[in-house]
Image (cartoon, rainbow, N blue to C red; front, side, top):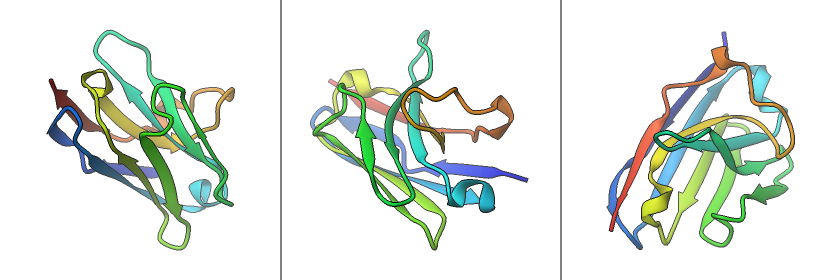
Length: 120
C-alpha cells in the first residue's frame, strides 16, 4: 500500500520560511521523480517543484529562487524549503510522484497534505 505523509506546514508572516517534509513508503516512490504540489481554495492543484532520484530539479516560475526541493533516498523522504513566503503561497501542500508535463497521479495515492498559511 502506497503512503504519503506530509508535515511541517503552519502559519507564517510574509517573508518568513517553512520547511515541509514528506515521508513516503514502498518501492513505488523510491525510483521515481518526486514533486510538491499545492492547491489553494478555488484553484486547481499545481506542481510547484520536482526532483529526480538523481537530484535534477525543476521549479514553477512562481517559486523559482525561493523554494528548494530535496530528497533523501535511503530515508524515503522529500523536503521543500520555502523562503521569502508570500500570501499567494497560501495553500494545502502535497507530495507525490511527478514531473512537469506528466499526468496528475492517481487520486488514490494522495496524502492528507499540510496547510501553509502566509499572512500579510
